[in-house]
Length: 66
Image (tube, rainbow, N blue to C red; front, side):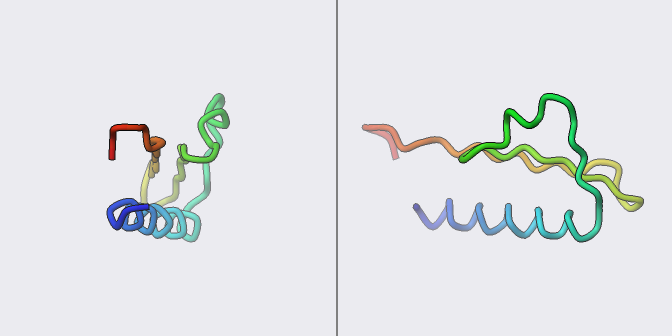
């Protein structure tokens, strides 16, 4: 992976860890189909924030791109 992707994944992990510590994950109907390798779509809520949403889509490297 590139340095940019590595940095973005680090930010994703930091956000997910922070929201998991401070809030409760919300399991919205139909969202489970998006949580698979290369695609993260998670939501948390707490008394401090109404909705924290992390949505990450990693595209596969295609021939001629990247």
